[in-house]
Length: 431
Image (cartoon, rainbow, N blue to C red):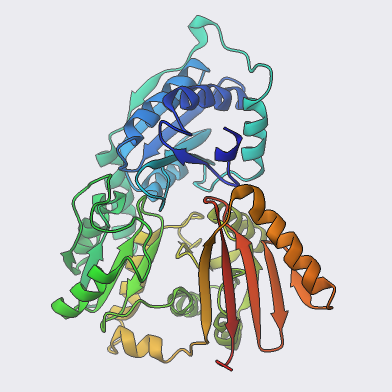
């Protein structure tokens, strides 16, 4: 059971690692962590097992003394927005993000929509403690429903009032049968764009592609952009907190290039730091420092990025995994907001998306994932660090092991959510 407690969530195969009995008990523990009181909102993704887990967690928290508001199926930014605008002690989102459909998980949220960090460990310790206590029968909490449709409307109203379409773009949307299908297409059309959709039916088995949006899984989107002569394509992950963009030529656009475009626009009116995690390309510094930006490098994980945004007063943040943060609107990552913002910038520029991104240089970059058991992947990093330290290399162990050289770098980082480790490497030239 211990292995399903990850760095920033709980995740495992449903009815094998992660059961409703466990979820109900965890809900009670969460209520105890908050002193058997408070108000909490729960949302969920569209996986087949998510309704059962939502009900179990809600029952446990109510039995533990918390008042629970369930939203039902919605992208995680909708829950985060609902928390941010409401009067809540905490939030919970049921999801396994980009993992295969047999997985599911539980993520804790702060009232501002950001995720838990150190408190994840404290909740884990409380789960394994002798006892958490229970309130008297007349001190248990309630469970009420706030329809997801209403929460989505409140969220889309907020965004549609703040972002515009200088000219209507033709946009192909690929929600991958996931939670983003509940929001993205209607929101883009409401702002004024013309939308074509692939894989837009809700289906928690993800029959058409992996819920992990990568160049390999987004072939259908790339082809659809070319077929429709679209200005832009966007693919979302399973729970709607990541987005990958495709240009008018049907090419997946490097995450950092999208981040650079939006950062440049924000820097015109807002002075502040740009946050990027350690595996992001060197082009972030090379391009944005010319605009006077200071770049802060942080560890991977949206929960950690949110902490650094607060610490450094960041005005934009990006992760190599295609999480984007625009703190001038709110602290948490939101791919729907990012899509609207990018479309707004492209609509104000007569050049095609491909020409704009091609003006930003690219460096040879390698990213590979390798299966590695959870009990070994951290030991591998220890051995790598020992090897390069003995040779006097410049090493950063903030998140895995990053070894820097004069014209490039390499990094080995164990995944916090899967039994694998990832290798990243970049150089200014192929040689």
